[in-house]
Image 1: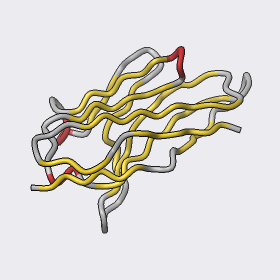
Image 2: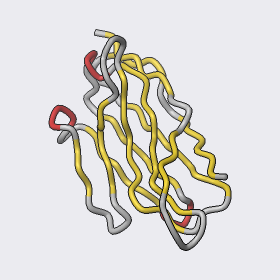
Image 3: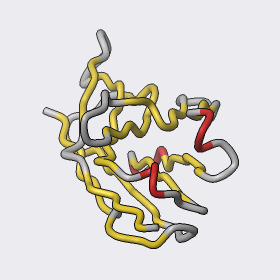
Image 4: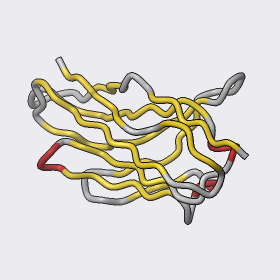
Length: 120
């Protein structure tokens, strides 16, 4: 099994910063993409940022220039640095990885989610 444990999140004023981390543990052979998603009340979950095993990144347009995703492959950890936060960034943030437990197919795994609330 693969487990994801998230940390970070919380309550912050607009313009502030937060940092998320998500660490994968268990039987892991390889991790391909790692990413962060969020879900605001009454809205669908959306991709915020993803990073491939080679370090290529992709961001939601509304967070470009404010959020930075990074990963530490030795620690099986992905980070999300969020700066210049806006009230519309409020939501539950989830990490997701695509990983294989052995040489073979990869599967998606989700973290438990952490609440981010940005007050105006």
